[in-house]
Image (cartoon, rainbow, N blue to C red; front, side, top):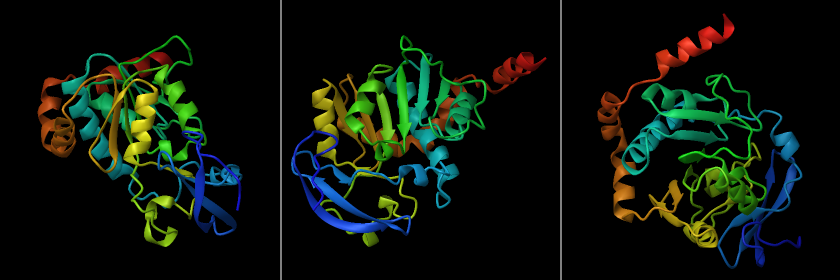
Length: 262
């Protein structure tokens, strides 16, 4: 057995199963006895896994961004200052940033691994002094090698973090019974439960809200848990109404980018 500790809370873990990642790397998985976090052994294969930052099997990328556009639009409009500045961390190609700017939110892009294709000109400035109203972090937490450290860094930018990641079922299913392990691409190395996020929220003096499956919010705001769930569920019906009240940045962005190259 490989000796290790939880990468979230530093407590004792137990081995639960092993599998093969990228069709070549035998890998042991562990579960934390304290916070419930499920993690791989130390992910030595990540340089190979990120040779292509967007994995080839992610056929749901566009559909997921459209859905997240609806969720974020509704939550931001009703719970936060929708005229503020926002950051999408781990933005990938920039599809989500472009969608949110098209709605009318002042969103910016940042990603360590991926080229910005759709939100060029709206990269988040690299400055320790900048903060935003809310930070989105979609399908990213499961990629973090050191989740608690990464969260500390994000909280320096915003105390409001809207994120998506799938809760690992309890008990943790074997690799052939849960698609989210991502054994074919090897980029998913850590999996959360509600109590994992509750631990992180308490540690950072935050509150945690969830739809119970894949949309979660860390914030200082006090909300009714039922209202959070309702807004995420009804967002596809609410978003078109919000868009009528917002002023899209599509044309304004075009004029800014056009002027920058003339």
